[in-house]
Amino acid sequence: MADISGARARVAQTMKSDRLRRGWSKQQAADAAGITIVTYRQAEAGRSVRDTTYAAIERVFGRLPGTYQAIADGDEPAAAAAKADSVPATVTEGDDVRGFVLDVDDPREVRIFAITDLPESERIWHILQMRRRDRERRDSEDPGQTRGAADAG
Image 1 (cartoon, helix red, strand yellow):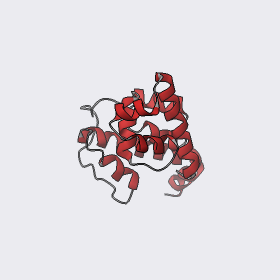
Image 2 (cartoon, helix red, strand yellow):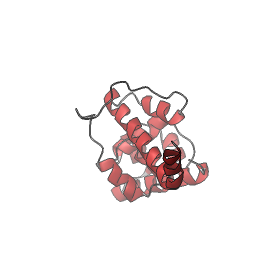
Image 3 (cartoon, helix red, strand yellow):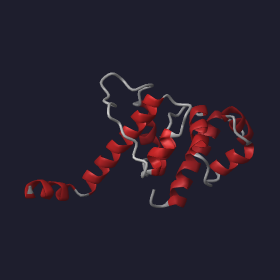
Image 4 (cartoon, helix red, strand yellow):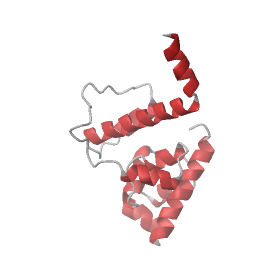
């Protein structure tokens, strides 16, 4: 998230749209998410809140964990929702999570893994998807550099 204020503003706008689409007040959204109205107002105003707060709000609005993070990372709300629709409820048999090692130097991975109301396998799946998106983003930003490194070897 290069532009923190812009990232939070995108998340806040999406959150507000989610709430208004349901016809809820901020108090109703806070109650449904099990958080205080003060915390909800901070989130919808684009101020910093805990990842568990975002997860609670995402759940109430029918979004899967990580949707708001995807929006903060620059995905459009529709694209983030489409990605969220493709997330399995749990890691499937074909997903290779053996040998998974949490990168404790990546604060995003640590925050995802700290969401303890998700099964561990689902947290791992989200981290693996984030790593895949990062790889794809790097490859699309400079595909020539990847090719050049391969040609040199």
